[in-house]
Image (cartoon, rainbow, N blue to C red; front, side, top):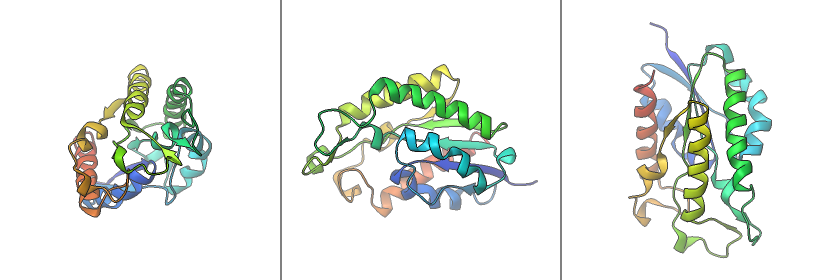
Length: 192
């Protein structure tokens, strides 16, 4: 039986777990992902066309995507997040529509944004809070539900992680990335 094709799209959290997903699914799927940090919803919208060169878009069976850390961040000491909440929700819907256009046979899955260690956010140059993340996740889930897209709740999965599983305020240790990768791989395997 030929292998399935999986595409992972996401920010630095996805970068941390993508190789583990590839390893975990190697028996049943070829896993592709951009080498770059896919940043925020605007960047994803502008880059989807270019990422079709990673593999044959007509053969992609699953696209698992996330974005949110950049969208809800308050960069350069701003009082509000980079992307307004209503715009984030709208952008998630547009991303889903674009994924369905470029990858016509793919099942689409949205992953929620993972939590942060608020005590480590430092000088607030790129501050984000778990309250903001929860609000953005709720908006993303609403958008996904409206579009008939199943959600992989990585926020709830990672919420019990203690501070020892973080390298800074939002990025994970190798051990935690393995756990996230196993979770994402299991989620995808059950749906292939």
